[in-house]
Image 1 (cartoon, rainbow, N blue to C red):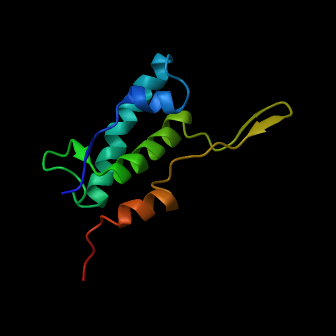
Image 2: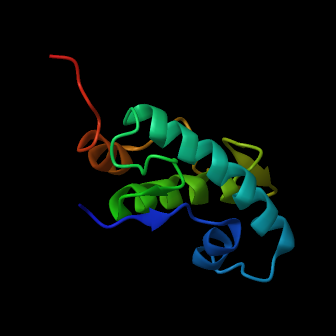
Length: 112
């Protein structure tokens, strides 16, 4: 049996973003973790998750953390931001990225 890790918490995501003391970041990350966790669980059709769905393989947890970070840093999903000469094109969440899918696909049960 492979080792499992607990579902990440908002405080863990905020810490990875170097925003540990930011209560807004912790709150946003907590909300997004649940969404991304459910998406990953559905994508893999439960493979790689514990029976109760509260734990997953370490690689799945890592993919979930990365996706949650991408949503948390840009909660309004702004595609382009400009103030005077300064402009920014932040990452938006359009689903799992290629690296995250590579991990999740190792667990996904595919039709034959």
